Length: 69
Image (cartoon, rainbow, N blue to C red; front, side):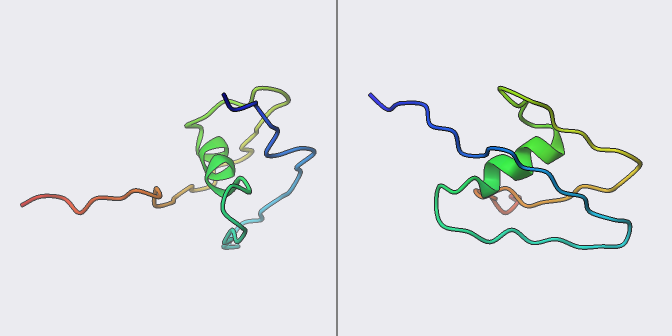
């Protein structure tokens, strides 16, 4: 049985209007989790995730399938 380990701790950052951001890191380091928190697909188990202003959030999920015709 796997124990629940913290992937993200004490994360704070700001992305300003017009900036583009890419996430790079090792497998299991929390990149997809962070994307889902920012996009509102996940809720943090502790703390908060806030999107301030009218920013546009876009990302491609890890397992993307081409639409069928």
